[in-house]
Amino acid sequence: MRMQIRILQADDATAYQSLRLRGLRECPSAFASSFEEEAATPIDVVAARLAKQLDGATFGAFDNDLLVGIVGLRRESMRKLAHKAYIWGMFVAPDARNGGVGRQLLAHALEYAGEVLRVRQVNLGVNADNLPAIALYRRMRFEPFGRERGFMLLDGKLHDEVHMACLLPTRNLI
Image 1 (cartoon, rainbow, N blue to C red):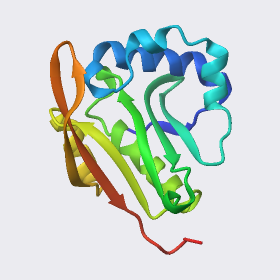
Image 2 (tube, rainbow, N blue to C red; image 1 turned 120 degrees about the vertical axis):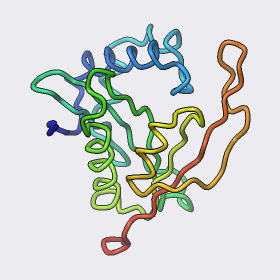
Image 3 (cartoon, rainbow, N blue to C red; image 1 turned 30 degrees about the vertical axis):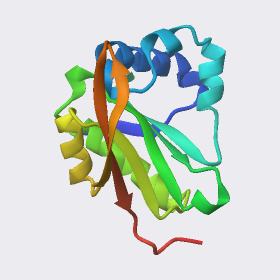
Image 4 (cartoon, rainbow, N blue to C red; image 1 turned 60 degrees about the horizontal axis):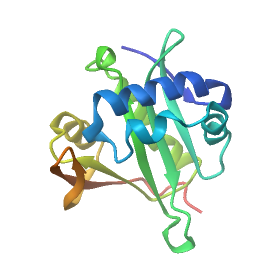
């Protein structure tokens, strides 16, 4: 499946917020944030978060005009860590899964990380029980480098998080 993948803009805020809230509601163990914490966020705040950024971007996958997948990328802000970026907030609608949407989103984020942000490494954290996501990240050259026990407490159950890193080619670095 070939999706249109692009950087989201402020005018995508309503579609983005709707899909993000769906992810938080349907897959609460995949995110540190909760539906309750984000449901009341005003749309103008969401739009401001999607406005052009120097140190990151939020990507969307569109099937025709329907937003079906999202992923965020942000460079580390401290000078000594600015050679790294991290993936956050990845979600693909269940009816759009298993067609390559997640792979395409990650490919765009990694390309942007290397070509635009010019970082050397991209990190992420994933719930240790989310085996399909871990398999996808491994296919995209992410390797585990640690595990945080009890990362999240959800409904009385502790969840571990696997930390993963993808080393990028160094040909375009400053």
